[in-house]
Amino acid sequence: MYLEHFGFSDFPFIQSGKDELFFVTPPARKLIVRIHHWLDCGHDFLLLSGAEGSGRAALVHHALNASDYSIQAVTVGGLSLSDTDFLHYIALELGIRVTDKDLMSLRHAIKSHLKRSAGEDKRACIVVLEADKRPRSQLSLLQDISWAPDFYLPLCSVALIGDKTLAKGLSTSQSASTAESVRSSKGTNTDAAKSSPVSLHLPLKPLTQAMTRDYLFYRMNLVSRDARDQVKTIFPEAVIQAIFEHTAGNLTTINRLADMLLMAAWAQKSSVVELRHVKDASQLLGWYAPAKARVKKPRTKVKLTGRSKITPQPASLTKKDPTTLHHLGDNVTTIGRAADCNIRIQGENISPCQALIVKTADGMFIRNEGDEVPLFLNAAKVESAALHDGDTLRIGDYELSLTTSGEGVPVLVSVPASEQETPNTA
Image (cartoon, rainbow, N blue to C red; front, side, top):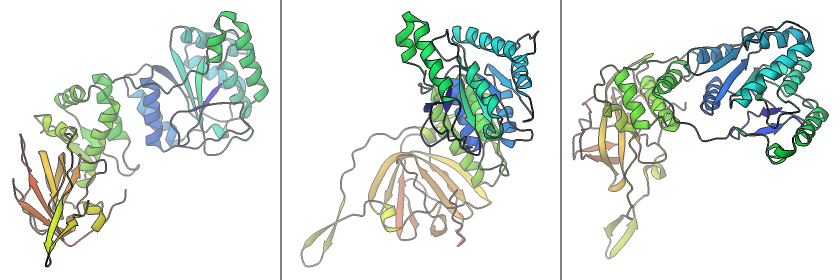
């Protein structure tokens, strides 16, 4: 059996022959992202939830049942189930007709079903929540049904998720003997057997348009900063189609888009992000257009103190005044887009970029997509507003001038800045 370790590394597989297996409970957001990764890799997903009332299990069930994926979701409730009942629940949910309800018959029926599925290139991934609370005998059963001695590939992948460690793992001798029997059972497939396990670390398949809609729904409606801060987004079909065409179903790009929409929702302190007014999807997608490549030339400043002296210009805003992720106020007046912006701070050209500009009662918020690290300007220090093409905006000791080209003009309004400053490190 191959167990997925929920640590800091990305989707590694470890064998149960390890002396000790460590499992940690990931946050719900990370867990659902991993679930979608498995689905995108072509798995039929088999979920074994743990104790009743598990919030994590309920969240995962909600995500799976609302999707268009081909999913086999198995619910195994109480932890007091006997080993026979445990396998019986799995068999029933897999649609296996069971005549003899003894342990060996159930085990054989499930393994045969999984073998047929694996032969059709349908791989199951069994996820066990609250695995640290399950009887060790049931985990050993999972190990047994995930392998077949006469089959050169694992019948399914298994991920155990729990709050505590599982000391000494599962039966190391059983794992070793099973692997050895696999190698010796098929002479023609020796190389394939030695190359096991089959890793899940595959390139992400592009999402379909329906999957794009579902995924954005999950990210926006199901997984927000915490359970008390749910955000609901209304996506018109035209925007979904434009997002799909623009991102080509790329999960990374869609994630960035969802993050930006969540940021806009939190800026408004609103539980609903209404996108029905977006008629031209370029309004939305322009925030994510990649910045044009540009070679930055060193800029110098000349000071005349009896003789010419060249002083290097400070490299960035952060060197002089660390930026603060400012929590925006209640009254967001405008969310607009500036196309192909050249942002200058004290004469230094940062980069041509796409910038999201949000003007609030407290000031201004800019996210610079041209840099690897977003540029957050302290909204409490805004001294002048109503920024137009070629105008200069003073922010404390710094000047920010914005020039635009192409379609789109910065949408800003003149609102007096307040002195209130509430840093937000979320």
